[in-house]
Length: 143
Image 1 (cartoon, rainbow, N blue to C red):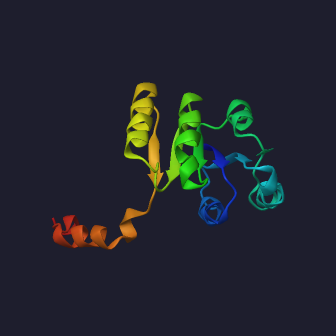
Image 2 (image 1 turned 30 degrees about the vertical axis):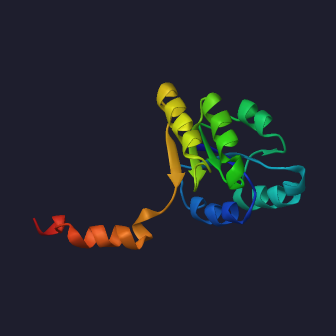
């Protein structure tokens, strides 16, 4: 996976801790604001991120990424995800996808029309309801 990161906040830094150990993830770029430039330079050096962008549209146009990880403030998710999908990029978006359900439906439809992946960055396996479901299902290892 060739990945462009949109955002440079704390969640990106946590996320990069995980991706550094994934050999099939190539970090092609990080996009943020001018205010994020120092942080992005530090992250690029630490995690071998190939390019730094202070303009998201330019990042989408110039990067060879096939996937964008969107980790910007929630109210920007819709706009950033839509731009990525329109640029024919798969998307992993931090939760929540959008602040309005209608916006999510539009993004889902766009992803389906373009045959792109649209995934929310959530780890269900650690939620209590997931464990509750798992506890109620028969253990497939005993069959």
